[in-house]
Length: 364
Image (cartoon, rainbow, N blue to C red; front, side, top):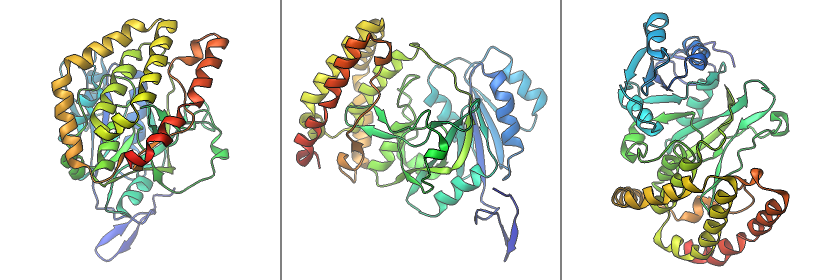
């Protein structure tokens, strides 16, 4: 997308049709990511639409990241947390609060922003005053013709579906914004984020730490969109099982906070069956200790979970059926199971929709 601007009255309009004088701050989260941070800051500092400020929030790095930024990008604002919190939402919130612009482009330290990306995100956001978050399409940095993430939906069992990972971008011709929940790279309306209470800092590093606020915003009647015309490149790195605890913990926290009581009651048989499947898969893949650690932590955090639940439910203007979906999904850890167990899991998974449709009328 071109960055050519034309004058209209007293303002200038960029190629996406948005006024140049609308300020956007860029916030980069970082922890020991010096190698990937270098191209990220280069892409932000040379973006086709200049940012009002670039902020790097550092979560206690020990790899010289802070020193490198001070030396090579003295204009970048540093927000050092001084210790490693290992809670990405703490880092995100610190950056949002430090930003002076009404709009914040939030990104990890392994992202390269393509020309026109921020303009496209901002244009989508400004087109509808109810929009509070817009995510871009992420392409694999080493295979840019392939999608890493392009939109997300939330399955009623508390897992993500529909990211289109490893699909050819050319095979996804849709080019209009769609509702989406999740995706750590996003443009945010800061005032609406403040109203929603920022990101939930109780989430561990893993699944759902970004999408939880998207869902909370949707409960409040705001829109979280994904725009496939806004493009970024991501450095794809395998995480193995080191995020297993976060996946187990965050899924439980998400459902307990976001779902209505009637939803939990109606879906209880399906959720219980799925929980057994998750536990058995954790046992088979060697992550059972992480699973029980997540259960223990959820119990210990019950007071905080209840506080977040009260806040989320007080914002509610729509039923859970407006947000949750059914359908196929990638079962956590199933790829590491022997073929007979994978087949059994797939068979059980195909039956879960029965629980959704059986309880739908009560949930709606």
